[in-house]
Length: 205
Ligand SMILES: [Zn+2]
Image (cartoon, rainbow, N blue to C red; front, side, top):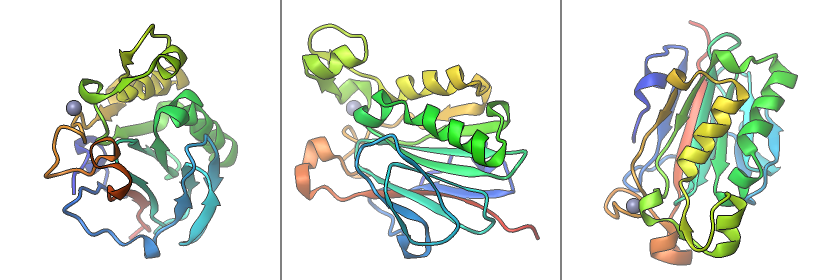
């Protein structure tokens, strides 16, 4: 399991970015039927919350989880209110501004201010390996077949929302480049496994 050094410094939250070497059981966590949307769901208990691609909660002890293989897991922690979010962002979710939607929903539900967030972008397919066709490239303002940097796109959205750049961390490892460590949908196709990432606000001691 990989950790964000920035999130790991906060004693109030527990988190992890699973690799293909980790067995992380989602049955004791909140999860989603992921559909590459920008839909955000607030949850209060461990179960599948339905169709969507981001989970938010302020419930101590409840872990939020997403599954990825090339798409990016993004974890948010509000150091002031204790609220958290787990986001699944591929090109569709990124283009649909799922980071914006999530922070907007955290603000509406928990009075989260973006300036209080710590954001960790996990491992996903790097620009090194993410050549897309013209239509997708155009959505990201690029011409022709191009390489899209989804981590960078999401980082830019976080900053645009008001998250302090110094509080945004990107794991930087590419799921396509390291077959021993990561599953990759683009490399392995339909049979690719999924890696579980999670974040949990800890109950106060
Ligand atoms: Zn790569």
